[in-house]
Image (cartoon, rainbow, N blue to C red):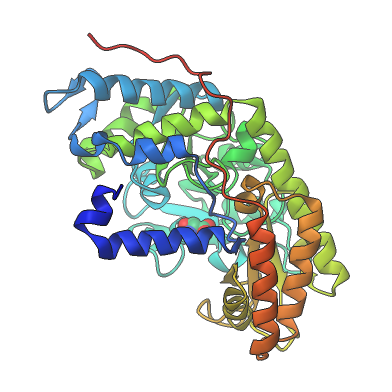
Length: 426
Ligand code: DSN
């Protein structure tokens, strides 16, 4: 039987079908991407998208909130429980907006923020030059030690003492090592700054207990919900009780209108999935796979920033190899291996054509790939890197990628059903 989408908009239906084929027939190594469960997908595509719910549970500006109040309350409670936070706000539309929401809660325009430099692994919204965050606030950036690639906490402390930021941001989008949120918290205290921690990349590892949680050390913790956490695309904020009122007010009426209740419901589903032993095993395998992929790539002669990884991602330094990040990512894409070109610390090339390649294992681990398959993927990457202009070899790798991915279908369910009891609305 034809679905409504197929019937009423065959063009979009066909494109979504093609995207499904692309996602299932490629090795997806962008570290911020994943596959969600059918349950998360169902909530995302539900009738909750029809509802406006400005305000918060029990205090809305529109009627008809019998169900949405319950949905949001469940999401909030699951987030608080999982991250052991005093308060959770589920309404940020995305990670970028969540970061802005966090900053506006604690500081005002013109104040100074101090985040990690974009070229060294920070996010655009951590105060990078092209971002509004560096126009609204005065932005100073810390980086990594250019020789080791690790965050130099003494340097961060010295810079904070010199620049006296009002707010320090910890967290990164392209940093392959553990981050000591406790030290960031101490530095912020020493200089009288607020501490916002952006764990968009790490939140799945944090809830699995495989990475230090910033919750005890940060005023506000910001995260996306769709990376290692494996939920729908969205943003989430956690904070200490003392910031609860201000944070909620920043989001509405401060910055946003109606929350995306279909997304909030889907985040609640993902949080329930993440609160299971199955998720813990998944997160542990993500890290094992990244470590193995790194080891193999090194054996093939690739240079990795910091020499390896403690988390879900790797940053390949291509300087001196004759191939840029863009050349390699484009060639890999033709071989059905999806990555992204990325700056590496100290890169003098522009971010539009930098000298690094960022890869990660969250998505392919969801499909059940393990160390053995990481060896195969490393050999594919090596073959493509040696043959960026050889379309015959790239086509050969592409066929082998199809063979590998066909053995690991995209799963629909991640946990045992019926673990979560439904609430009832009278
Ligand atoms: N685009 C996300 C990432 O890949 O890290 C961050 O915004």
